[in-house]
Amino acid sequence: LDPDEQLSESLKIKLREVVEENIYNAVNIPRKNIIFDKWISHSNWWPDQQIRFFKKGAVSWPDTIHTYPEVSGAILNLPVQESLAILHFNYSSINEFIEKQNRYSTIEANNRLKSRENFSWFKFFWWPIREFLVRYIKHFGFLDGIHGLVLVYLMMFYKMMVVVKMKEMK
Image (cartoon, rainbow, N blue to C red; front, side, top):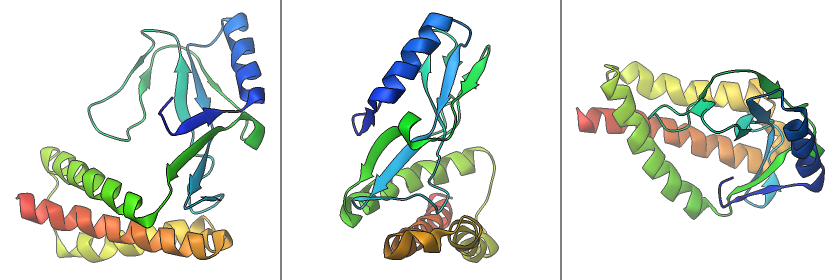
């Protein structure tokens, strides 16, 4: 677990059962994100499936940040239920969000350039618009209220930072 994550009692019980069954090499667990002191249950932040429980040697992570790991063997996908979710307190303030996103956007821009992706003005405009359409419309971000709206705008800004940093690094 990350330091800002917690397990519920029901999830602990379920994971003990998985160990006793000894069938799966990894468990894909839903993660409940608490952002700005509110559970963001829409905006493409739920169920935020994560491999967080696995047999030693069965999982390897690529160098790219926030990338799904490679798993050898069977994976158990836990049902999407709050009682079986990891509780993730990832951003308590806008200041913390901006600091982390500044770091993450630099990493993402660098990774995109390494994979031979280039800056374009189209990306500068399209990526933030797409972020809005996906998070706020497709994934019902408006149901997260003002928190959802602020979060979507911050994610739009994040996408703009990635594109601008790509140009800057080039």
